[in-house]
Image (cartoon, rainbow, N blue to C red; front, side, top):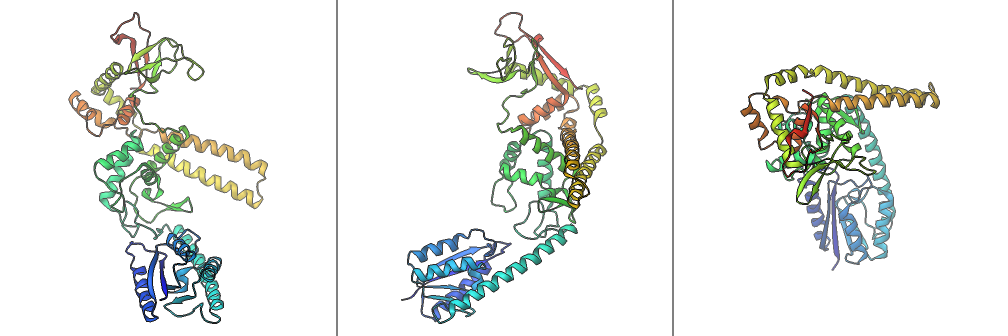
Length: 466
């Protein structure tokens, strides 16, 4: 009995149906049956290239089985299904010769390493397949470059969330989710909080199978695609041919805020509503939030990492309750509502900043081209790049801090409606902190006049922005 292994592979299976490999295996089984071989194992690599050099799990598993002496023959539909890399083919031939595989057959019948010059023919076929793949790769790269320049989509891989498989048609139900996720993030919610909302509502990713995770959500929100921008080789090359789901301004603000968050390395979730907003009335130092036994509190701490006086402390719960009541009362005031609306920046501000940022990026590219062409020396290039990088950083920070509607508009009105909005199910701690930060710059805690178990509210001195 000749024990045969079948190997099938297809490079691109966009719909994940596996029909290509299924047809290959059907024909391979017929060939094995016609030759009187018994198929003892089948190996399949679906949606994987044999030329890119990436790992193919089933191919590696088959080589290990050959080393273990489990087969006498290998059957593939065509030799290029096995590999398109001559070096990889040589490794396959070496293992076959050393571990007793005498037969290598293809459905198209070009070669059989058990007969005469079969190995020579197989090596020639491997070299031809590699050349064909290289030529095809060059054509594909050129076509991708042309499509990118024209703003056309890159139509490989799985469907992108928010768009149909054609990459051009918006899926409106998913677009609503993207807009809401962007709004929540720009309103101060963390990625963890937004992902938790998506999971709680049972919203799935593009495949319909997986729950949202923060890395997936981050990649979606920062993607130029949803802002109608064409990205190619890691850079935005122009406007896209497909409709945008969010605005260019929102895209710039999201990427700026993500960059700022990464620079600050903010990883731990918020547990204190007023973190970063509470200051010592004795020495002016920012007070730290930390647990004290079974209580939460804000305290002025001394030491090399804090530099405070360690004389002022206050329990977190009564302070936060007082500030929330004060904020809601202030938001219910007609005078505050008018001040907030008067201070709102028009969309044109964000558009202007976005355009300025794009112009600065173009200047960066022009400087590099001038240096490559020899128009600029390295001594001239470096300071010019430094100045532009400084302006880019400043513009990105302005965009990141631009008022994007931290949710203040929904909190303006009478006391009852404001309280209802504040207690809404989707009002997370991050959003509450963002709203407070939009109308209150900080709160100063003065020293206690005498020891007491009760909080003296006269010690609390909020400083309002509006």
